[in-house]
Length: 236
Image (cartoon, one colour):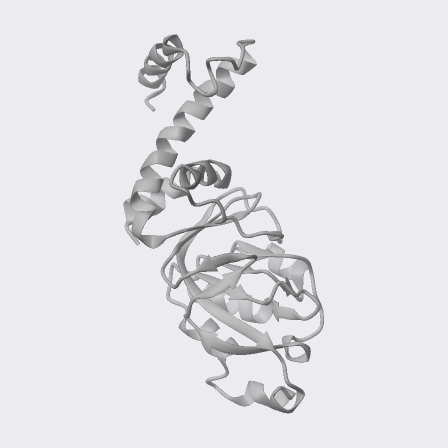
């Protein structure tokens, strides 16, 4: 992705991105029921590399399938490009794990920018201590083989009721994760930076005792003039 866009998205919130996308008629881009395994205090940003699970069928899903070097779950970990976010469609089912700490550690060492599942991780406490942003629904200990079969890599998926296409831009903060269609990522990043500057200004004014009426949203032209001066003074 555009390095400048990545840098801009590192400094904006998912909430702000939601508003920018909503203005374009995109209402359903925040992955539902997914949260950080552990807050990192920094954003996760990168293009999506996807893995799709389907319901497991017992005769296809014995432990021996993991001996196959092309097993989709293992292959996804080993082929996810550096700087990308692995996004998993786990059918919104956390009863069996999408992955565990060994696989996520491997993804981290290979330069993955993060990992998201609408299911659960096993070894979640260990994953939370890794230096890679990770998001899931809740901890889950049973192997994925009990309920899920990894079936497709880097295809369009649904994750937490959100459509995710390979290459879409994934942004996660300490609250949640949002998917930005790749073709509008640059303009959304630019708008979100502008919105964030005004939001920081508005918070400062509110803390000083000013009313939100006419300030947020900026319906009073006087506030825009004050904002312009604030930007100059704060190099924003």
